[in-house]
Image 1: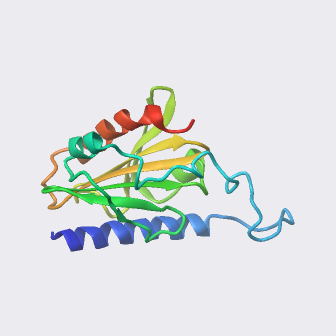
Image 2: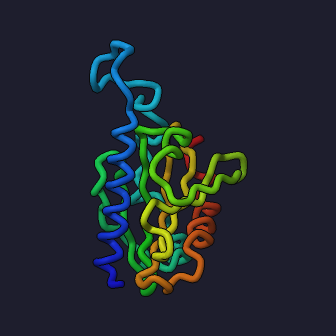
Length: 179
């Protein structure tokens, strides 16, 4: 599968995820104004977190990608981020301020394995339809929202353990993320 195809698959999976999360919003029976902040959508500690400038050159190199500015990955308005490309891997770091970890965990995942990362909620996650394609995210609870550390092999088998790689990067950056 080419890089473009893998990016399209990852983008479609992400759009499906957002679409399903939007559908699960429920009714407006509480009389709240549409668009008014709720406990899920209030401003979070991630408002000043910039996925495009957060990583150090050493962290990018350790992730197997070229150090330097990433490409904005804003296909999902609710989950802005940046992509970096390496010889064998596409790496994406993004944030979602509109859903906390629990709400995000209810999205459309094929796999969502929870674990504790130094006292922080975390999960190895594969969006529905992405299993077996060499794509995995580690979702970290951060600042009232989530940070998504995504690793995708350029080819299906170009990264032996994408979840392991995403977890390795997550362990490096987690101490610097807002609680």
